[in-house]
Structures are given as C-alpha cells and as structure tokens.
Amino acid sequence: MLNLNRFMPAAALIVALLAPVAVHAADDTQAIRHVMMKTWDKPDARLKVEPIVLRGAHAVAGWTQGERGGRALMARNGDGSWRVVLCAGDGIRHAPALQDAGLSAADAQALARDLAAAEAKLPAAQRARFATFDGIVRMDAHGQHPPASDAAHGHAQHKAH
Image 1 (tube, rainbow, N blue to C red):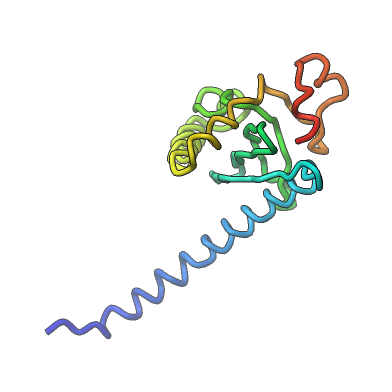
Image 2 (cartoon, rainbow, N blue to C red; image 1 turned 90 degrees about the vertical axis):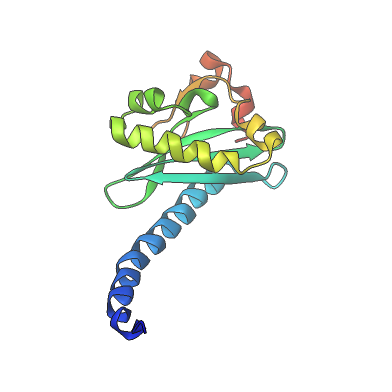
C-alpha cells in the first residue's frame, strides 16, 4: 500500500516554490498589458493584447487594433516596470531578430519558440493581423516612436496603436 502522507511535504514544497513564479508571471503579463493599453488603447480603436510571452527580462506581446496588428518587444526596467523596446510585425518572430534587439542567444531561441507555440493557439485571422505591421520601429525611453519614425518608415497605421 502506498503511503501518500510520505509525499505530502515534498509536494507542498514544490507548490510553494512554483507559486511565486506563477504569480510573478501573471503580474508581469498584467503590467505589460497595462503599459500597452495606457499607451495605445482608444475608445474608438480598442487594443487587444494577446498573447504575451515572457523570458527573463524580455517579453513579446502580440496586439491587434481593428484590422491591424503587430508585436511589441518589451523589456523589464531596473525598477521592475516594463517598457516597449520596439514594435514590429513578423520581424521579431525569430531568434536572430530577437538577438539583434539585445537578447542572449538562449533567451532569443526560447522566446521565439514560446511565441510560436502561443500564437499557434490563436485564430488564423488574428495571427495574420500581426503581420500587417510593416518593418521594425524602435521606441524611445518613454515607449513612444521617435518623432520622425512614422514618416521615415511609413508607419502611419501604427499611430492608432
């Protein structure tokens, strides 16, 4: 007969160790969504932020707004808050582009893999909207496009987002 009481302390320890990770990831996801909503959500152009994939101090958040969409590379600041590093379409789906944006090779590969898995669960129409963002636009320290970026890169569609 198997004595389950013998395993309870170990199970409790595992749960106790993993719970803060799950709570932290949920907090990060909410914080990322909040930053993006505060910056780009409009009453007449609602922003939907999904999926959000985390890896260390970086995340990629997919977004749609009407018939448009894209992805935002996010970075955790020293104080734990999040900021938008860049906005792109398919340009940041793969590890080499994430490495070019400053992620380590291991984090870039893991984030690209996790992003592909998360996006595979979404409807095809939503995934197609992520590709409508043209090019890659780096953001300034406040999460805004540099002043000339819309004209220089033809990103008029991103002004709503």
